[in-house]
Length: 471
Image (tube, rainbow, N blue to C red; front, side, top):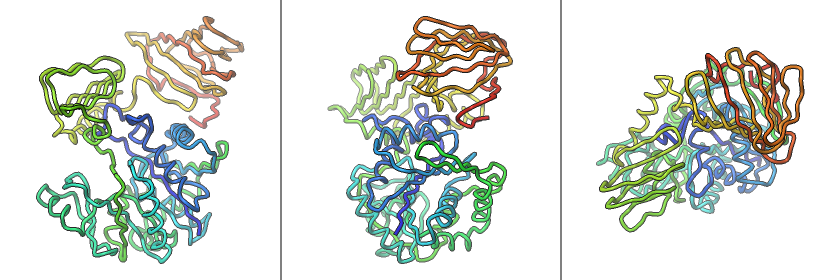
C-alpha cells in the first residue's frame, strides 16, 4: 500500500487579517509558539507510517514560503512533490489534481490522505490512530471523512450526521439552537475537511458526479511544466486549461452526493483557527481573562486579546476586545464580531488596498524586503537576501535605486559592471539600467535601498533572467 499525504494550501485566511494577507496567508503566519500551521501539518504527515513522499497543492507564488516552512518544521530531508496552481479553483480542483496525478504515478490503489494546511491538531497520536482506521476503510473502497467530536455548540462549522461509521448527510452551518442539539446528539460531528480514499475510488466518483472537473484537471496536468528544486519535484499547472476548471468545494462537488461515505470520529484538540477568537485561545489567560502576545499594559480590563508586533499597546477600562497591531494596520473588534473581520479584508481587496495583499515586510523566494518609509517620489526599503540566493536580472522604467550594504557581502550587476560590495559600501543604479543583487556569502545580506522616481509601484519591473521562473 502506498500512502500519499496531500496538503491542500489555499485561501487568504481573511478572518485573521491584518496578520494574514494574500501574499502571506493563514498557513504561514506565526503562531504564539513560533510554529506555523502548514509546518505542523507537514510534520504530522511525515510522521505517519508508510509515507514515502508528500504532495502539496498550492499557489505557485507560495512555493518558496512552503519550502521554508517545511524545512523549519521537519529538518529531515524527504522527497516532496508540489502541484502549483496559477490561481485557486477551490478544493474540488485541488483534490482532483492530486488524485489524477497519484493515479498516473502511483497507481489506482494508492491511498491519499487529504490534509488542509491551516488546521491545528494538538493530539497528534490520536490523529495518527484515526488515520490508520481511515486507511483501512479507504482500502475497502470507501471515501472516508474525519468527524471531529463536538466540544461545544458551534455555529461556524458544518456538521456530519452519521449512523455508526456510515455518513447519512452533510449539514450546513446551523443556528445556535440547532448547534446545541447537534453537540449533544452523539451522531453529529464537526466537518473537519480531512479525507482519505484510494485514487481509483475518488476518480470513479468524480467522473460520475463532476466529470468536467476531472476532464479539466487532466488536461491541465497534461500540459504542466515539470521542474525540480533540490529533492523536490514541481508540477506547474498551465493557466489557460486550469481556468476552465469549475471552482467549487469538494463538499459540494462530491461529498454531499457520494454514496457509502464513512466517518472516523476524532478527538484530537482540532481547530481550523478560523477567527481571532480561536487564535486567542492558543494563548494562556491571566486571572481576568486577558491574553497577550507582545508588549502590552492592561488596566481595569478583562477578557481581551492583544497581539502586538512592534510597539507597546495599552488598554484601559474595556472588556471583550480583540486588538491586533501590526506594522501597517491595526484591528480593534469586539470578540462577538470576530467573524466580521472578513468583511474588512474583502473591502480592502475590492478597493485595491495594499494592506489586503502585502505586509510592510514582504517575503520573496530570495528573502524579504521591508518598506521603512514612503513619500512623494521616494521609498526606502530594508532588503535581506538569504545566503546563496539572488534576485532577478531586471530593470525599472520609472525609478532609480541607491543600494547601501549594512551587513554581509553583495555581488552586484549594475549595467555592464560587476561589483563586490561589503559593509558601508554602496552603488547607484540609474533608471533603465539592468541590475542584479546576489548574496555569495554564508551569512544574510542586508542593505538599504532608496528608490526615487515618478512611479514606485512593485509592478515597475522588467525581468530578463530569473532563477525562480518568475515573469
